[in-house]
Image 1 (cartoon, helix red, strand yellow):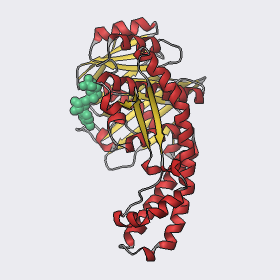
Image 2 (tube, protein in one colour):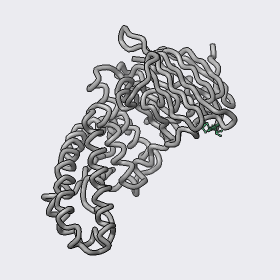
Image 3 (cartoon, protein in one colour):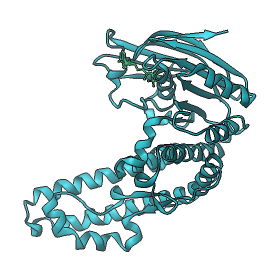
Image 4 (cartoon, protein in one colour):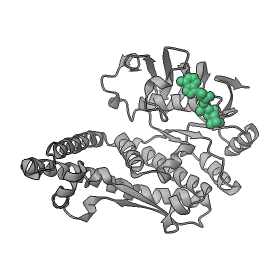
Length: 368
Ligand SMILES: Nc1ncnc2c1ncn2[C@@H]1O[C@H](COP(=O)(O)OP(=O)(O)OP(=O)(O)O)[C@@H](O)[C@H]1O
């Protein structure tokens, strides 16, 4: 599967651009702020019906305009797929496949698998647990459709339980029997999500370790430990013990909405001990493991978007990444860089078919 052609109108700073792409490596070179990442984000949008960077769609419309359009032609096996995404200010977004509008955007997720690796992914390591849970959820829901429904159901239960806790105004007696019902629901739905998360991390970790070891040259040990209240006995009992505290807090303090991943480098938290290059290697390896996972599941290579990948990595790590990119595991790749010569040298070494595009102040031109 690959993106053959893309057409953009008013997407962030890209006013108008039409590009023929290669099924190999597409390179976008330009100065800071030129629009390279915006192009990658438009490609991301066509796979996930949303931006990788902005959760508010209207912010994707060019400041001086009232709408944006992204159109892409994909080759999937012997089939061609036309994707259309459009948004007018103050209106609902339109998302179509082969001219037919989706009634549920979630039906589109998984059709065009894609993995983005961007410097901002360091937040997976440095920020709070919510981002790590979101990461797990976004990957698992790509290959396990019922998972997303479970998450939606679970969040609804937590919200309703929290509303109930607040409504009691400190008087537990008023809500005890209702809490029993919500706790049971929370435990049952939570257990299902926990099992899926646990299985996923168990399968992901060795693949992640393989990539980390390959990129870093094998001198560093890394691991991912999954933490969940579900590992600490029956959730209904834990919730019962915490009731008085939850009542004071006004929210539910136990359950899979508090899950976290402990990310370790040589036995210590990579967040505290890791250098910038080690942190970067860590999230790149995590994303490559995700890539392999999805590839095995779908039976073909997802599109890989590599935004500003090479900064802060030493020459050996860059060489390892080049060797990886040259492998057949990866098919269509999009890479951005500010340094033409560096990217040229890197891409040449992969031996793959490639195309270069120059990005200048929101304009993208193919370089012959
Ligand atoms: N809605 C918008 N309308 C117009 N311009 C926008 C909009 N959103 C973002 N931009 C502009 O897009 C530019 C950033 O583009 P982008 O992130 O693609 O840069 P880049 O080429 O990847 O740069 P770097 O090398 O620094 O990562 C900024 O100049 C920003 O002002």
